[in-house]
Image 1 (tube, rainbow, N blue to C red):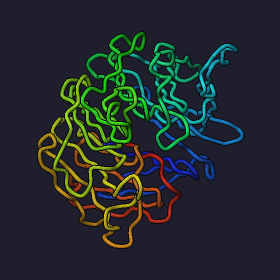
Image 2 (tube, rainbow, N blue to C red; image 1 turned 135 degrees about the vertical axis):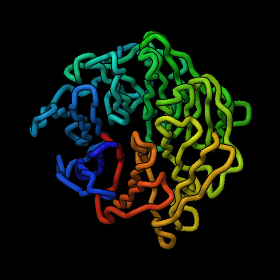
Image 3 (cartoon, rainbow, N blue to C red; image 1 turned 180 degrees about the horizontal axis):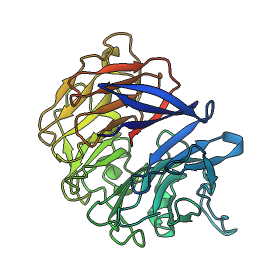
Image 4 (cartoon, helix red, strand yellow; image 1 turned 180 degrees about the vertical axis):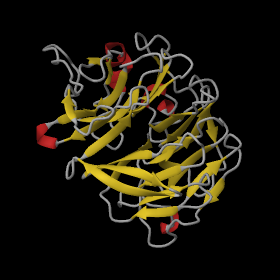
Length: 362
């Protein structure tokens, strides 16, 4: 069970520390500055924080184990666009949207997903980064487009705990992509997904899908869950094929999904009303949980506001700890809730924090 969690918000990085069945809030790092994503690396105890400083650009900081000081390190940077390029996307890092470690057998390896759709790899704890050209140069990237942002972005990076060379990434809007050789080659891997926002003849095009979030079950790594713009999907073969989850209560629209760390049949979702109205259905907050691979769902409301609630949970705003029972959920309205019973009941931790981008244990 983790004793710490990291809450990335529009106005700083908040540490949460477990206190019995609850959490204490603080300290706060980078107060007043937008922190898009943070990462605790269990391999060496270091912590990373990605900042988006607008005019001053994207920044990345690292705090080593046992230190109280943050050190600015290199941020992923795109090469200069060739003069003869026909690419309409600006080759400039707009946001670090995903930050993950490599495998346990890859000390120092980090992965970063960015806007406008580039995947970066570091082999030296973030001191330098390389654009993964095999994915960036894929011909299908010319058809990617923004989903929520003006440009495409990589928000999900799933490294197979059995084989660090097996990597699955999610692109909005560009589908799921899979590599079996550490990023040297890539295959679009969205078979079964459906994009209702496209013309009928294109709605099964694998490279224009909008998977809002991909979440792998670490203990059952062939199982990957997807909250998609047009519904919910599940894969039982590492993302090679996807089966739609139907009969979902409340709503099948949302952004966040958390996969149980060991049980491939259990996952949690944070439903919203629709793309056009990104609020809880009926202004009542809920979490939906399946324990049978998406066949049936529990609707979990205890402790969550059931009237006049307009919170939205972003892609990285719902997390489950390694015990499979402790959850944290944070919203765009600055509310944070915790659960110690797998979501059966929730406790409000705070209601006046800055809008939350991401929460994760570690």
